[in-house]
Image 1 (spheres, rainbow, N blue to C red):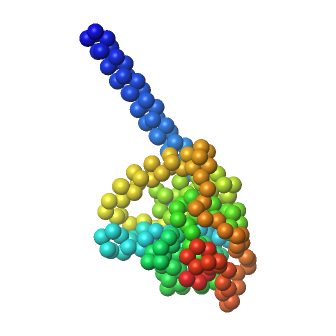
Image 2: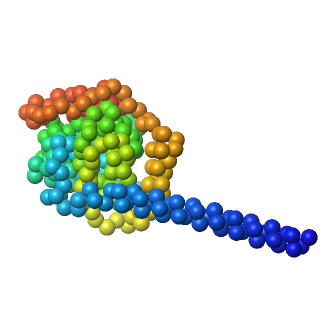
Image 3: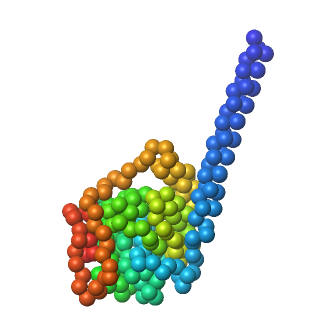
Length: 242
């Protein structure tokens, strides 16, 4: 009896070990697959980014949990503004979370970008970019974009680019000028997990965007002297004024 228990225990350990090994291999393999697919279209120099008509800028809080300014937010805004000023992109789709009245990423992005000298007519606000996935699905289906430059941190770009590619978009990545941030290793680890989850979103449970709404294509050429509003309900749709 004791030998049977020991044998059963050993078999359970071997089975558990094999399962954990398979999970680890899938986790690492998924990340390497996404990195390999997107690495060729990531540019770390602003001068090499684009040219494309539209740059998509991903939202994040402009404050850290400690109450200081978020350098990731400002590096995305400064890089996006630089792309406009150097003619690498003509227009920016700024997409972020506006789930509550007190938290409005697109409005904060608009305020900083206009302060950096970007014309309001060159900005379209997407208030329903609740996640990287939602931002790109809406860019494709609501704003009818087939080509774009994606602007965010280097560790975030592979997942964003892979989603865009899977949606049939021609996307390239422009690395936002980065600064060392305390605790950034947590973001990088979370990103490795998020890449694996993205494969499930795309190919297993067929995730849908939280909110789509009617099509609102960005029209070209943009007349910077005549900014017009194209949004639907405040807090959900899009606009080029906050």
